Length: 468
Image 1 (spheres, rainbow, N blue to C red):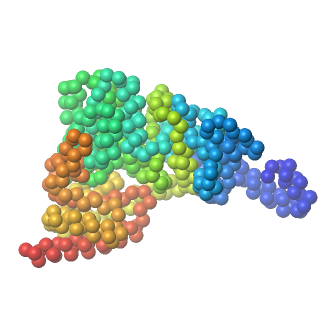
Image 2: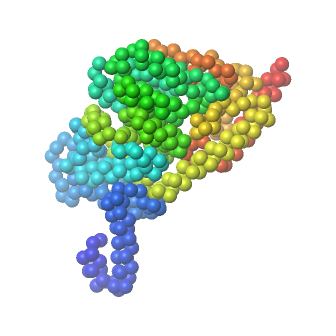
Image 3: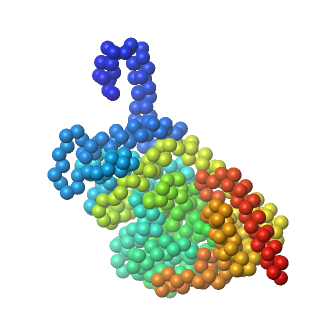
């Protein structure tokens, strides 16, 4: 209702009551106006009823929702099922145009506004989390692996004679397959073990650059967030190397936004004049939304435009809607509280596992400082045949996410064979278990895991001893 409608309503209901309703509406309008004007997250979470109402109002700006609209084109945003329309708040045009995923759609002012505003809110969230030098954020309606491929294709277009990607090994298929999907050749840089965890082989990177023609290197891919015992890649060194040899640098930061340590490492690399072209991260792993989206960060407007313009066709708006709703539901306070809580619970988890390893003659196989999300513990008292049993017993007891890594596991991806796949290195000493204290974890999750895991471990270890 606008002011005229409220004025006429005073003929039916006492003015004092209408004034209260008018004030409430103005309060809501003020909250929305401030978000659009300043393009920043609200300090406090927005009421979900207000978010839903605002989404509906934005959707009415799209032509398919105009009263009396007559559509005679091949794509007019028609939705057959009311259930589907309600699920997506009547947004049906998607985002972007055929030549640019970030372009404005004449028939979809509402969808275009939602897309632009969400990208701005994401950028503000990134600044709040600590990446203050980032200039642009773009939500891509594809998960991390495909978005990595999109970035590689963009860089390949700028470097048409390139064919290689220097890749710091991480045993996660989507990152490696993103290179193959871009029809590029990966040069695998093995991790080196030091102080009981895996670190970037910085000498091998420089050696490979010197052996190859730098112009034939499309980019270097480094990884920040990963399963222990692999640590954060040495982002500062790699960034400086890329700057020295004029090689693009793509960072796989899949779930690194939730870690203040990882954020600090990226920020320091940029502040020390290192080269970083694109940083890719998942929406679901960092912001607690369904799988389907990712965020690309960059410091350069031209790099943003190059990426936007290489995407073929329009794109789904669904990941954007999910992120828009979630960021407003969190507000700045909710986001900061989640990050701090995760950091606190990581320390709790680490200390409990450290004590457990001492009690059971096992050891921690990860760096608390350089593996700030994931923790690995040895399983040296369990033989390989018991390890599969351990993993399945955890899963059947509703423990998800814990990973058991066995020695000797081989994996072939395309024509590339990896030894000890899952361990990020061909040379590891022990089989191990890795767990993570990721955003959204509760202290009760840690308590239940420790109890169930210890019970299973002791049972399997007793059985092994009795077999002897």
